[in-house]
Length: 307
Ligand SMILES: [Ca+2]
Ligand SMILES: [Ca+2]
Ligand SMILES: [Ca+2]
Image (cartoon, rainbow, N blue to C red; front, side, top):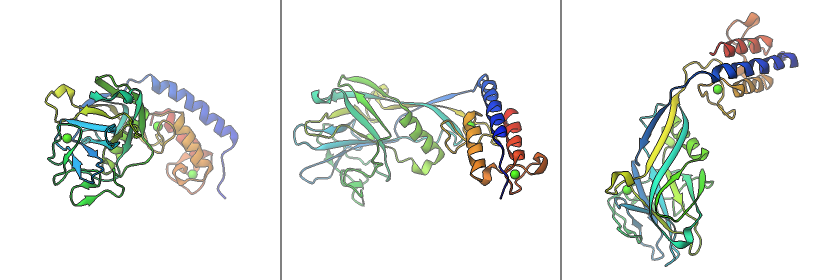
């Protein structure tokens, strides 16, 4: 069996790690902020009549449930993130929308964001009011992701059932800003894996008389009233020799050397994960199939050197 490091070596690793954190914390990290309007937005209108309704180019989008027929509305929104490099570490995300109508029962209701799991369309339908217009080719409707050819697996849209983020939202009209770690994590995921960027569905609380509300879309005439996603990021350093984890000990390099990197390295070392077999005898570079103090010492010397 491979050798294992002693507890004394572990203790040393953690002490050195803490020192390096303080050192690196003093380095200024350049950040970039971009603001984006949606590349597509629309509404899925549930219709008790069975009609396929949408509003691809309408100036308004809807969510929640109507008081009139207790029909649901769900807004879809996605953003082109291709201007953000794939090695960006997303540090902050906020989405500002312009609320133009919200029924009395919507006060304080949650607006929830879910990641979509199927590509959807934005066609030429235009519903100036909240009833929806007949879907046209390419529209997303309650039954179709892309009318009339591609149906949702589940009417009302295919999305991750657990919300990425929810926020209690007032009914007062005007700008509302959504911001939270769940939104940041979604943008980070989509920047890393652009094929998974299918946007969000925004849902209100769907219950009888439950809080229908209306936001401006990207087609609204006043540019400032369009949805605005603000993403702040910095580029992670190319040095990954000891940047083996991200904040929270996720599996990605994040451009920072912190205690999380040390913990993940040690955890992998203890479990015999080949990614921690970084050294051979005498701390020579390269795996040797053995888990020894040399692996820990080479990792720590790289870590404290900042690379
Ligand atoms: Ca639209
Ligand atoms: Ca790291
Ligand atoms: Ca080794």
